[in-house]
Amino acid sequence: MEYLKPSPANSSPLTPLGFLERSATVYGDCPSVVYNTTTYTWSQTHLRCLRVASSISSLGINTGHVVSVLAPNIPAMYELHFAVPMAGAILNTINIRLDPHTVSVILGHSESKLVFVDRLSQSLIAEAISLFPPATPIPRLVLIADDTDDALVTSSTTTATVDFCCTYEDLVENGDPGFQWVRPESEWDPMVLNYTSGTTSSPKGVVHCHRGLFIATVDSLIVLAVPRQPVYLWTLPMFHANGWSFPWGMAAVGGTNICLRKFDSPIIYRLIRAHSVTHMCGAPVVLSMLSNYHDNEPLKNPVHILTGGAPPPSAVLLRAESLGFVVSHCYGLTETGGTVVLCAWKPQWSRLPGSERARLKARQGVRTVGTTQVDVVDPESGLSVKRDGSTLGEIVVRGGSVMLGYLKDPAGTAKCMKDDGWFYTGDVAVMHPDGYLEIKDRSKDVIISGGENVSSVEVESVLYTHPAINEAAVVARPDEYWGETPCVFVTLKEGITWKPSEKEIMEYCRAKLPHYMVPKTVVFKDELPKTSTGKIQKFLLRQTAKAMGTTGTRRPRI
Image (tube, rainbow, N blue to C red; front, side, top):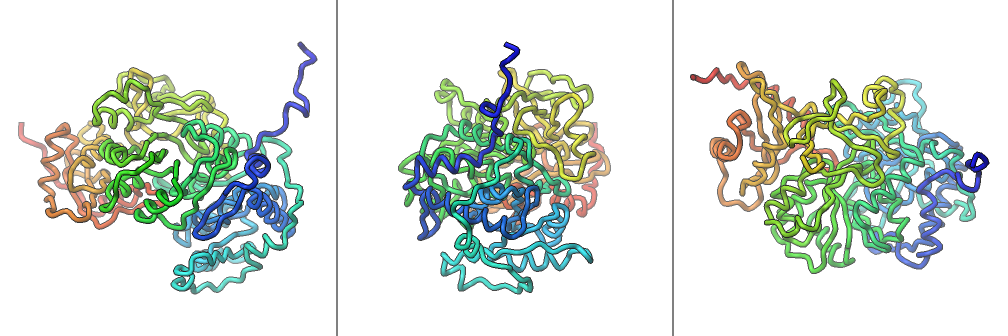
């Protein structure tokens, strides 16, 4: 069989961009994107993407150039997931809730040549550019006007002092619908550049290739068991890890994308009912907001929702499922391009009591079919930890969707992608006897109190069962004797008739947790700091706890 070798016929580079062409043929007259009163078909979306890709090329953007986008989940944001790489450029979607300094750093670090800016982010881009160091080239700017929402147009104001070379619709109108899009010469060519959310450190530029995103996209469809022509509601920001690869995934199955500028519980329920939404994704905070909305009613038809980004408390899972949401729990990182671990559900578990079902579903689970291997190892020895559900280790991954590496950061890349062939995630977990892993913390979030490791996730899970608590986050606070003690920040549910005291919350935890895990400090907040995807920014809470000083506890009497 020596003559059987790769050839052009069997080794075309894998890329998710080809899904769009196929949908234009198979689902040409079917709705692709719905936003307020605007609806496009798959044929129209295909042509619009080709036109924009053509116009991007005409602006002097060449293969390998970085093109950035500052926009929420609107049609232009969806189209640019295809149009930018179809022009041969590298797509960089930026979190619109970042501060101007961070946006400025990202644009400079990525050497972005062109930036698409939503009209409500004009002030943000103006200030970000004003912070550029002297002699730094300023990228060309394109304004996404988005005048489909009259209320937003009349209320929006800006102090922008930047010049836009044109509008997004100018590029659509002037582009060539017959443009021959730039196919990758190699499936390893970079396709996107995503910056990490910065919940634990400064953002890093994660580079993914066409091949990796093809694998991540197909895998995401399998993970959520997405059928042909679903109705997908965009509650997950597309600027967060490219919406877990679902922009390309919806093209693969000819789905209808219901775009949403801003998350709001009443609007979510209205859109679910108006469009018969079948699928959506979101962080656990999305589940919490939807399940705690005071005017919600059980859904007439089930809505499949994939959640990840942080371990969802079992109490939140139970409330969401009681409303008709079919929750699948996954795990992934910006560095993996999407989901790599799924809590694969076993039929016999459905016969268990609700609390037990929720506990099992709160586990992250097993590797997805598109991931080669996942393990929990001792970070020092690299050996697998015991499958006892209690021995802590670090989650490691290998598979085709793992990033190429961090942009301009070989040291950072080598630190997490070691010579043993694993990508080290930095997440602390245990492996259960049945082979399902469960995250216990980020390595930086483990609290070491008197030599005992306190999992903030375990403490938070108990707090979420308290009837008055809406959100909870546990971090370390310095302590004179114990070194560190758990400090909890909580928000309370709307409409409660009583407010628990700090002592009452501590006693509640004491009844359900080992003594050393009970919070020694409780701080009530109106709102917890979060990233745009709903991740609680614990590094800010750690700073607050540290600024509060030591708890001053003394060694207990024997």
